[in-house]
Structures are given as structure tokens and as C-alpha cells.
Length: 485
Ligand code: NBP
Image (cartoon, rainbow, N blue to C red; front, side, top):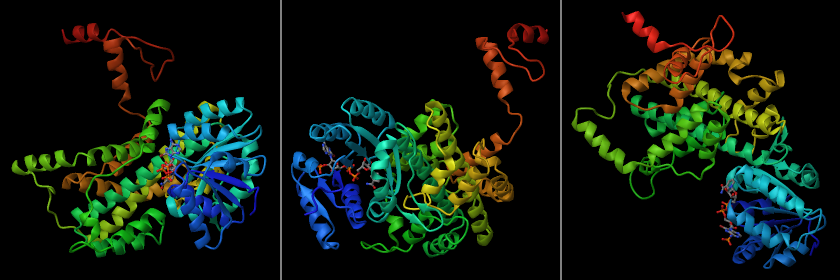
């Protein structure tokens, strides 16, 4: 028995079990522990079956901790929130100064910062590490976003470099993110971007299906084709696959039988809350969250559909002849341009937080480690990395010369798709809000002058002028009344 083992892992549900096997497979003997001990035995059994991997199971926390070589490093993969505090309490009593705990869950970054401080008082090191890629990623190579004590990162850098997804031209999908809760924060924004990507793809599907009348076979072909070009990504690939799956409980395709209600676990909501806290516009991500909320109102929507149908409004308002091939090409361009806006928003959120917290995060490096292993992996991330390599202080991805050209080239198609969807009564909140983001950001003058005038009118909030510096207030009511006379 290879005791002491190199590392420990506590929490053997989907993510923990798979990550433990991955670590063992890369040649690092690992000790495992779970509150419910049957999962320990299950993991050890799986390790045997998957090639006698060096996984050692423990039913009690003390022998688990003591089985790990010093300084001890334990990764926790338990449900975020109180279970993390409880697991820390259970394990830390047996740990010694210089040992380290890593939380690999989707934890709120401030909880990580609170725990890092509490651990420091005990002489323990702490990391919050985002792990992306779901079950498959955890087993065969996730994207890893560790943040917190740099010293702790160094203890396990060799393990993380081997365990992470490997991308041939850009290396392992892991880097030291930064101090404090930065690893969790970056993972949270990654998930927010994931919400945006999924919503935009769903809208492309809706327009092609509802307006273009494409069959599932045609949708499969379109998405497979798209996956050979600029949209090449994990999410486009699995979308193409989904259209092939027949219903095993009846006729037709399974996707048409899936209830149109999207679940969520909270990281999208946190992202939008952070956008508001940081005063950073993230309308594409926010609209993807709103769409999930509205999808949840299934019964209300069914009733509303009846109300509007009985008033003569059918689901699709315009029954117009559509050039399918042109529509497919337009939707591809609209999807790509909308995606650029969504990533611009996510990156701006990270930068704003980095500045607020002094984390000094490298945006190009984040794009690099998202290129493999994680749910948003895409060829497109290469372009983002290059944009930040060209100019690390880029104000917005939209103004990078390459992205700006791509937006200009695609804007006509994008506008056609959004107009067609609006005229057809098909909602495209992600694509529409991305377009509005682009149209707002690229305009040198907005109607914000009128809003500011209104604020000064009713609240004496003052305003600035375009021609004279300083702060001004006007008696709008009095002057306007006089003007009327
Ligand atoms: P879950 O989030 O479903 O959590 C289950 C694990 O938490 C089990 O090991 C369970 O132990 C343990 N646990 C709970 Br619940 N309460 C506990 C407590 N009071 N004390 C000790 N242990 C407790 O597992 P998961 O889906 O593997 O995810 C783990 C983390 O990774 C989460 O933060 C999740 O958000 C994140 N994540 C998940 C995915 C994914 O695809 N699933 C992807 C990326 C990140 P028990 O067996 O004794 O009940």
C-alpha cells in the first residue's frame, strides 16, 4: 500500500469520484473519504476495475488525513455552502500547520475568502479551485481554476498540470488564477458565459425550427456543419448529437419530448448579481437567466398562449416564405456575433472584479485554460487569447481590430435574424440584447442626455455639459413653463 499517499480527496459524488480516479491514473497515489462510507467502497471498487489505480479508501476522517504525506493536501468536492464548512471542521482537527485544503466546488468566492482567513489562523493553507467539465472532464481532464494561497498551489502544481485537460497547441488547462477567491469567481463567470452560450444556441435552434421549419435531421446537419468552422465548440457538437437521438418511449425524437423548463444551480444568478454590484453591463448573460426564469413558468405560459391564441394571435405571427439556406447562413453569423458580445461582457466582469480586489488577473490566460476540458471550450477562445495578447488593457473585446471586423462583417445578417424573429413572434432575448449591447457600445452619443435632464428636473441631481466642464443644475420646470407662455 502506497501510504503515505501523495494527496487526499473528500467528497465522492460525481465530481469527486471521477477526479480521484483521474489523479490516480496520472500516477499519484490518492486517499479518499466520504461522509457516507458506501461511496468510499464504490470508488475503490471502480479504481480496481479501471486498471488497479492507486486509490486508497478510508471510512474515518482521522486515518484518512494521517494517510497523506506531509505537507498534506486535501481536495474537497462536496456540495457548496454549509457542507464545505462541516467537512473542513471534520478534517482540520487532524491536520497540521502547513497542510492545505482545496475546495473544488462551485463555491461563492466570499465564502472561500472567509475560510482562507480562518484556516490561516490555524496555520493551514486554503485554495478555492473552480473545476469545469462535469463528470467527463473530472475523469479525463477538466479545466482547473485554482485561486488562493500561491504556496499551496505550488505544492500540487505537478499534479494539476497532469490532471487538467491537455490542449496540443496551448498546454494544460490550468494556471494559478490569483489571490483570495479569484478561482471561484472566475469559475462563476465561466458558468455565466456558459448560460449565455446555451441560450444563444437555443435561440438559433428556435429560429431555424420555428421560422425556417427545419427538421431534426436538418438541424443535425446544420450544427454539424457549423462545428467545422468558427463556431467549433463542445456545446455546438453536443447540440448536433442531441438532434439524432430518437425517443425510446414513443415515436419521433427525444428532444421534442423534453419538457421546456430549464433548471439551474445558482452560478448564473450570482454572475448577474455581480454584474449589478460592479455596474458592468452583462445583458446577454442576464437575458439567459431571465429566459430560464420564464421557462420555469410552464403552466402560466400555456395559459397565456391560450389567451393570445383566442385573441387571434398564434405562436408564429408571420407565415412568410423563407430562403432556408440564407436563413441558416444568417443565423450562424448572428450566433457568432452575439457570442462575441457575451464573452466581452464576461471578460469585463472579471476585469472589473480583478481591479476592485487587486487580483491582477490575466484575461488572455483565462481564455487559454478554457480551451479544453470545460463546457465552454471552443476554437473561438484562441481569438480571445490573441486579442488580449495584442493588448492586455483592451477596454472591450468588441474594439479589438479583429473582433471589430468580424462584427462589422456579420452585422447585416445579425440584424436580419433579429428582425425576422421579432416579426415572427419568436423571442430571441440573447441575440437581441447582444445586438443592443453592440449598438449601444458603438455609439458616441446616447439618449442618456435626456435621462440626465429628467434626473436633474425631478431630483436636482445635476448634469455635466458637452461643451463646458463642471456640474450644472437647471430649473427645468420654471423655465419650461415660461417657455410655454
Ligand atoms: P454534490 O454537489 O451533489 O454533493 C454531494 C457530495 O457532498 C457528497 O459527497 C455528499 O456526501 C457531500 N455532502 C453533503 Br450533500 N452534505 C455534506 C455534509 N454536511 N458533510 C459532508 N459531506 C456532505 O456533488 P457533485 O455534483 O459531485 O459536485 C461537487 C461540487 O462540484 C459542487 O460544489 C458542485 O457545484 C461542483 N461541480 C459540479 C459539477 C457537476 O457536473 N456535477 C461540475 C462542476 C462543479 P454524502 O455522500 O455523505 O451525502
